[in-house]
Length: 167
Image (cartoon, rainbow, N blue to C red):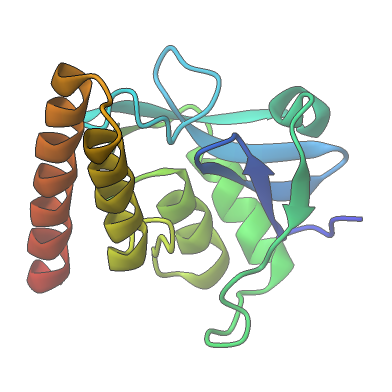
C-alpha cells in the first residue's frame, strides 16, 4: 500500500500517468486542462495543465498501477510531510504542460525529489517511436499517418535535445 509522499505510476497503455500519494486515499497530479490525465501523445504540444487533488481510485480507474519511487536509488526523497505539503499547496494551480519539459512525471518527481525528471522522455523511447513508424512504413501502413508520425517523432527528438542542452 502507498505511503504519504510515494509516487504512483498508472499504466495508460502507451504511456504512464504519475501522481503523488498524499494519504487518505488521495493523490495530487498534473493533468492537461480539460483532460482526465496528462501524458497523452494525442496532443504533444504546449498546452495548459492544472494540478488536481482527487480520490486515488477515481484517478486510477480500471487501469493498473504501482508505487514507483523511481529515483530513490539515485536521489534522496524529501521528507513525506514536505512532499504532501508542497503537493497540496500546488492544487488548482495552472502550469504550462509540455510533453518534453513539464509533464505529469516531471511534476511528481519534482514534488518528491525537489528536481523534475521524466524517464518516459528519453532517447530510447524516442528510438522506439521511430522504429515503430519505420515498421509501419515497411509493412504498408497508412502513408499519411506514418508521415505525420515520422515528422512528429523528429520534432519531439529536436525538442528533447533542446531541453536537455539548455539545462
